[in-house]
Image (tube, rainbow over all chains, first blue to last red; front, side, top):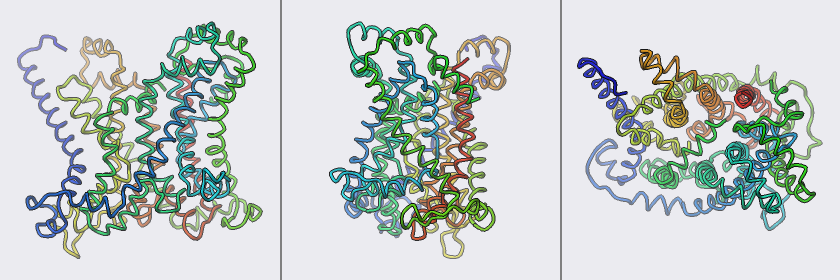
Length: 295
Length: 326
């Protein structure tokens, strides 16, 4: 874009650049503002906002709201619940999706395409389409005692975990199979020549090469499952077992109308995803775009 | 269209998703015969477990929703208490149930708002950020930040802005006293719009990220050619870039529609999806939780949601497959 331009055109171009930056800065500020406002509110004690008004500067700033919402809201408990669901769910969905992707992308099956379509379609459905029968199934479907303290899927960590895995399988399989298709075909042949069976080919040859896609998907899945509100809300009954995002709604009742406390609680719950945003932005974005650009 | 694609999968090698050459497929065929029994069994297990999970936890409930929508069942007692009542649930839904048409119209408004405001804004920002400008990473980060947040958190953050007495907006407008407060989330003719602004905060960033990735994939030679031909930036975008971006445009369109149908969390957090925030998704939910669970009736609403969602899903799958076959 460095062609020769006359002085007038160059000035116009410069002006447009400034306008562009002004617009983008304005948009960025607007976009950051709601979160910044929440942080600001969370740092002010309730008495201070009462004394000075909500929209004011000055007075005392401290972390009291964080300490109070952390202890009164028993956030540790809900974070632990989330981890119990999240960790196995992410491992399992990546394992199962990579196996599925391996079979459909590296071998010729009669139903390859049908399966991929069914998986993708299943992932795109609004969860409310299946919730009514699923709720009934969860109430009736038996589980052995070591997996469920009430003998069924309903109101259990494992129930929430399983539905996350089932729902996310479609997206992960789709992304991983696209990725695996780009790996050279000779890999399989070399593995066969070396006497590796199907599972070894998958585990020791193909899977290690899929690591970048797995990392991106893991980041994405951690964020999505962490952020789930709906499944936890409907398929969990015991308040103490709620994952953190679903538990937020109850916290609102506990904190009543103390907006400063709500702000602090929200920020703390947002922190893990904000860490993803700051530290793993590349992985997160490439996970999102892997699913769309190669489709 | 789908039919053709499925059939072709049966008698020819499956259409590759990522551009597999025919020779590779031929190699695959040859290799297939080299399998011993154990390999075959392994493959069946590896594909079988994920497939069973999707079938059992997603497809079976989907079909069960359809069947249950023709029945009357309050969920008490076993399946033998289910009575088939034909289309009664649907006729009740369309004629008697007061919340149905408001919910449909709210979903439509949600879709139109996303389609004509949030999504185009995200695309527009992506186009601007795709230019070779200083600080583009910073702008991108700022705009995409809300995407990592859950909609539940988005709801809470925006409540700090919309709250009647303590909220930022009313404080700035000087409308905090009893009597002259604006109830952004309580007033049924305002709250949908307030929630849509909050939802768009996230949607814009989402679309921006996806579209930007698509734009990066456009062959720069195309733009250069257009510039040499004397096309303005606007012409280059609408006549050259936008048409080339067709696959990603389809993805964005489908995401926009699906996200509008999935809208739930924000409405539920604000007021359980009542009083101005009725959506199909919240109606389904409210019909199965609570004391009077009307399973057949709730399923009928779910089927309306399903039928609406199936259109864009098939559209997307067909387009995705056609791209591959080309």
